[in-house]
Image (tube, rainbow, N blue to C red):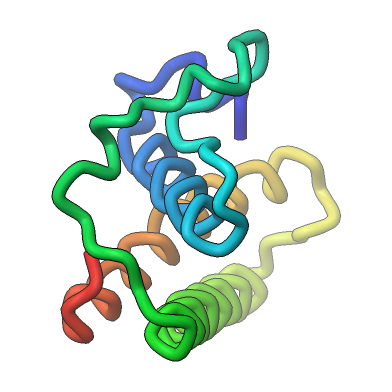
Length: 121
């Protein structure tokens, strides 16, 4: 993931996925990690990144996390089935990297759409 973020202009969806996961982690743990990257100080997360966002109740957070991760899982399984149907070998490192890149972007996009439908952004 960090390798893709070194070229964030080429992989904006990966950057968005990492930021969303970091914000979710912030909400769950109370520890600010949004915006953190390897080689940066832990407190370098942007305080402005959470400005205007409302805190979720534990029930809302659980519901949002469930929707988010179920959607990601469903999309990743769908992509893996598609790869297998096309005869691609997921044990091949190049194919595996291609799968991970496609799955991380497409699955995250699907999860974001699902989150928007629930009103959580």
